[in-house]
Figure 1 (cartoon, rainbow, N blue to C red):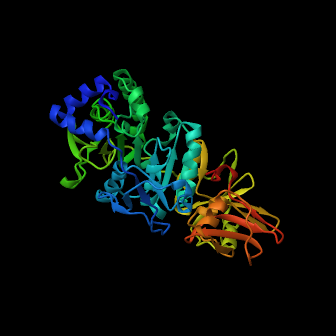
Figure 2: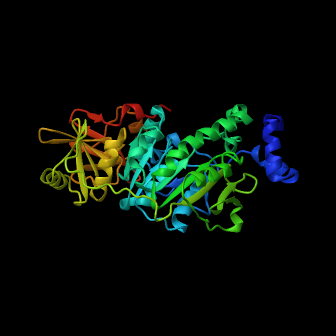
Figure 3: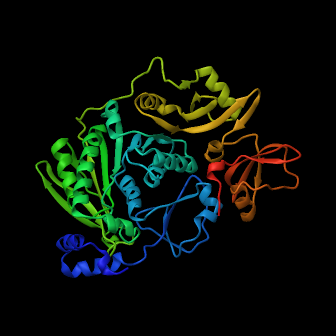
Length: 458
């Protein structure tokens, strides 16, 4: 890429931020090809064969020496890993190094789902995540990625930040990876260079303030707010810290980090003290441009507990009573920690420990998916769902058949296949012991139940 593709005003802005000499290093880095990185799903054991090196701030993150064809890797479709930019994996280091308590989290601008799957892994069975996306088509991609990740601790919603008002003071952690001018993506996305202007930066800044004006109120007393952008300028970064501390009571949080990582700490003076932001420059860090800050809500700030909903009423969702839920749990061979709901003809499971939180969320927001969809019951037969296949829940009583790489790709393409000695009835097909989906052997043929809209076309 040549220098003239960088907008002049952007060059002036970066020279002011870095100084003339360092700007030359930055300019050289921004014209190089970025490295590909992935984050493994610790709940789905898998060892990639590609040459890789660890990302220093992520236990599950790796740089790849070259970019493989992820579309032609069945493990990718099984949710064994997520292709995620390395800088944004720093959120994992924040959660672990600050030992942020698990509980009910919100990712307010979540699509396509990289940060949501990271939060989902951190929470495990000890939390519930609301992954929200305002744009409907992007909410669909977010839902797919939550299903593939398979931990069953996520509620996917499709709402504007305004709709969250009934949930003020409700969340232990709120993450906002704000829509921004995309300066950090210039080397990945030439279109971001073309769209950039000082006016666009100001437009993004005012949009971010509208979002953060709502987001700040959603954090409960003692909870955390994480704000990030993939941009460098002060209007979208430091100015947002000043805005938040003027609007809400927050306490500063400093993130421990190694000098060798090359992450630049910035200080923001406010009336409430000195706050901290962290910048990732591509000439200093192996990753894309990124900015992140963490703020803590004082313990004295208002907190909303879910309370007991005596009669849960929802236009389409029905909670199963104790006995009905227990019978279902026993039939499916689960461990007794689930709470069950029916939606149309299908059954869903969430973690019982968080069902009150879930019901409060369900009454306030527009649900796109939640927990794990298990499937339908017709007469005495279960018709298991693809979501259950990809989840980490047990699949007791079903035959499993391990596929080769080529067989797995044919299954993912929904092409007709025949197998010797295939068990009758429902079969769970796996690749490297990772579930891919269901088939049903009718004797004279095998029906492939992989979702049509997900099939691999390459």
